[in-house]
Length: 239
Image 1 (tube, one colour):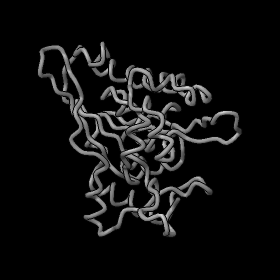
Image 2 (image 1 turned 90 degrees about the vertical axis):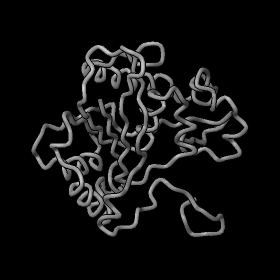
Image 3 (image 1 turned 135 degrees about the vertical axis):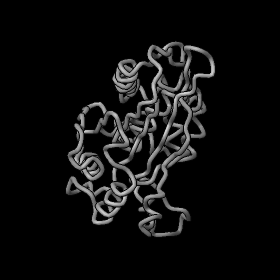
Image 4 (image 1 turned 90 degrees about the horizontal axis):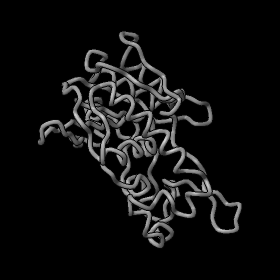
């Protein structure tokens, strides 16, 4: 089975839509992919994701809207402070001081993540995700997937950068805060995973592409900067 995760096009957060560039991105995405490429389609309820899905599916198949696919942004708080932070936005020095952020067995119980009930929200997302995979023939067990009904179907999720980091962290048994700290999927990027059944009845998912933007290259479009931070500190790029 294949899992495809697509990040929405360049967002206009203020107006709850896509930017003009974002609409160009999803138009290019719709030229490369279509409804016939997917067996089932799931989408975040947020408008930027829905607009992206609609540009690809074009009304040819049902798009199932799932509230749990909305962006995973739950604020946490520092010691004795009202200052809020987000788990994809840690300063490098803060991230490095908290070494348990890299430990998949403990990081969700980190004292800072507890201030935002992140573990509860994380578990809700991955449980909903696993329920879909189980219906498609792959049941979570001991960090891998028991194969109930092997198949070559493709399911696609139109969602958001941090939410996709959560899904990937669950599939790979890695901390999502580390994935979102070190990796960045550009807007409209396409991530493709495939099940591998190297042991009979046991599958793991392996990533073939991460944040692929070949559709932008085909359309001679530069990727947008959304989700990134300044390459050089003394620059006007996002800090």
